[in-house]
Length: 233
Image (cartoon, rainbow, N blue to C red):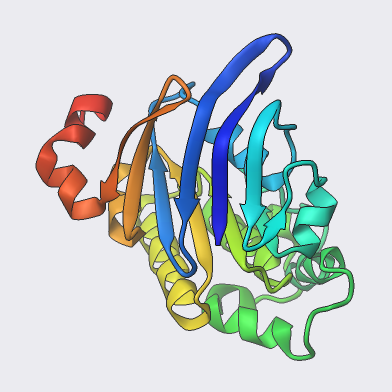
């Protein structure tokens, strides 16, 4: 579904991702672990089209999206939930979700709003509440729901546990697993929260200085000691 080949990317003259290659199968949840400053968020920005690729290639299915803008990638089924959530504080839950539908360019099926709200009962209970008055966890649910309004094929999440109570972190991990199970949604989750990633992912990789230093099924990585070796947990 998603293929990254020999990608080099960075900011200014600096290189953050070094000749990075990875693939994500259709319906897979890939967890990307790493300490701060190791290239995790840069990877999400590259996949979403928010940062240009200096060399290498990115493909979704049979389509080469290496030079495609973020807007074009959205139309090809890539949705991103940025770190910090990025909801519109002055707009209501329903208004935020309708903006997600607009991002899809009008191709969203009738009834999609109700489908999305079934994953997030907390949001369904408060359609007229302004996003800025919600807790961090509720705002994260809203950000994920807004991304789901585009009916994506690939969902990118950047630090979804950031600033959220532990109880809601577990709930959001379970929500993502349910969405994946019901819709076969290919998902890439960038995180420092190892328990969250291992709870929801089918496979994990570890980034260190913009390079993949470990990659494999969650249980194998945990058993091998590589998570402890590279992340100290």
